[in-house]
Length: 205
Image (cartoon, rainbow, N blue to C red; front, side, top):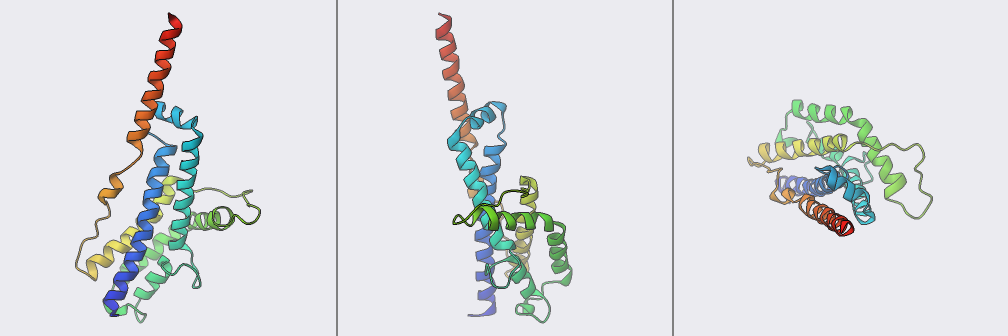
């Protein structure tokens, strides 16, 4: 396998993980923070959608941990391994990714270190292991906005690799990401409101 094929395989695997995380985050965000108060009230009282929202967030955390777990022995496609291989005199040095760009990514990672630590800690202590006691005491949770910044870092790396190595454009806003649960939630919330309104009208008679 040529180095170009190898870096293509590497960045594609990173992109797939990032895309999954982005989808999970997008859906979970809407289920926690819908557009309207009507939807919020509907979701607040639905055990099913509460379960779905929590499951989506859990999967987002697990996917992001694959990308941001800073260990040589774990998660083959984590972003630390990949960026390191782009440095001068390392594996992918022939692609000559600028030191300025590499330093920018490292700085972005450090600026978001707290979020990264929270994500990996949630993964290790809460979401990834169900065979022992769950350690929730003292654990914090990053906001959706903080979490989205991690995806932004990954997408910056992907965009640069496709531009510099393949002279191509990586379309981050995939049509698949246009899908969201807002339509069905709006329909269900409106249907419930209509049923309540009909019942109220019947009671008045």
